[in-house]
Structures are given as C-alpha cells and as structure tokens.
Length: 305
Image (tube, rainbow, N blue to C red; front, side, top):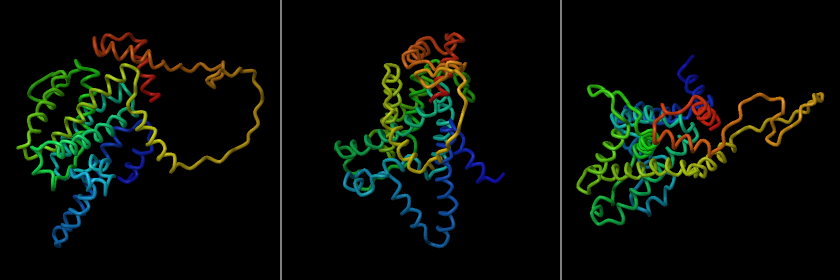
C-alpha cells in the first residue's frame, strides 16, 4: 500500500480526527519543504514566502479583511521543524486524552476554537496596546500553538491528576505540565520578546481550553456552532445516496420514539446530564474513582461523538 493510500484511509476512517489534524499539519509542512527547497536553489524562494504570506494571519485589521481565511489557515501552517515537532507531540499526547473522554468531534471543535481565539487575541493586543505599536506593522502569525495549547489546557482541566512519565523527570501530573507551558507563554508574551505575538496567541488558546471544559461540565457545548459550520460544508461535498425501494415483511416489532425497534438489544447512550456528572467526578477524584458502569457510559458517549 502506497503512502497516498495510507493518507486516504486515514481520512476515510471514522473517529480519526486526531490523526487527521496531525496529518494536515505535517502535509502542509512537507509541501513547503519539498517544493520550497528547490525553489530557493534557483532563486525563486520568494514564491514560497508569498504562499506563506497568504496563509499567515496578519496583525493589521485592514490587511486581515483582505484575507479573512487566514484566521483558519494560520494554525495549520509551520515553517520551523522544532516548531511543528513539539506542537504535534503535544497535540498527540493531550489530544489522546481529550478524544478518549470527550470524543473526536469535541477535539476538532476545541482545536478550531483555540486557534480562532488565539488569532483574535493576537490582532486585538497588537492594535490596542501601545507596547506592540512598533511590531504590528509587519507582524504575521503562523503555527498551531494556540490550538494545541487549547487541547493541553482542556485535558489538564478535565483530568488534572492524570500523569505523564517525562524523560529524566518521571511521573508528572498534567496540570503542572500545562501550568508550566502557560507560564512560559505569559513570560515570553512581554512586548520586548521576539515572539510576543505567538505567545499572546498561546494564552488565547489556553483560556479557551479551560473555558471549554468548564462550560461542558455545566452542560454547555461551546463547540456546537463550529461543528454545525463544518458539517454544513462537509455535506456540500457528500454524494447523496440513491433512493432504493425495498419490500419487507412485518415482523411485529414495535417502533419506539427514538426509531429503535423494541426488539433491539443495543446499548442506550447516556444523556448529557449523566455525562456531566461523570466528568465532574473525574475532575474532583480522578478517572480511577469511576465505577465500571460509569466508565462504560463515558466510553459510549465518546463513541457517539
């Protein structure tokens, strides 16, 4: 099987959002690497810079209005190898937790919301605060850090006492890992820093990650508008199945209001209030405190998402 087939299969598989997000980021990076390198050899490196310009988020509001798509494209675009490496590692580690407990669709909405919030905060800070006045003229933002930090903080808010085994350090609770990343972003967000704008975006993503989980625990899903928009565009490109008329004999099964036959033995998905109660229990006492039944309900909910 070719690499192309592997990529196609990754996007065809259901509930595979985490791998798909990583693949999109890596593929964009590789396109710039594979095409941009020979272009630089023949003196056409400006072509790559021009493409990056049309994908990166500008700090100037007027310029942003001429390319509004950059509020999305910027958090799928990387130039530095270490930049994308650490972003994708963090997205994988913490994204696995978000996927396991909240489902793949909430991971997607969280990633998008974190990137949008980070980008908007970046534009606002660079235009409203005098300390950034000199930098705002030619500043452009790229990288998935805001989206990734939203996922990191969301996982730490949901499962603060979950531990990762860090090299040379040992087991560390993820709430401390998230806190360290946020504090570093806060430190380097000072106006004198070379990457102040990037770190400001980090903070916007981090806030969304915390708020997303807190609202979810109260029964409010912030990601629903994002998913509604994404589903709308996805449905535009879906082929509508041809209608087929079939004849079936009456078996006596009585239909229930939810469309499931009374003879069905499939599991009934828990309602949102029950999931919120389980998430609150995880937040206060950890995943290990859940009963077998509660773990099964959480798993059923994640499959539904």
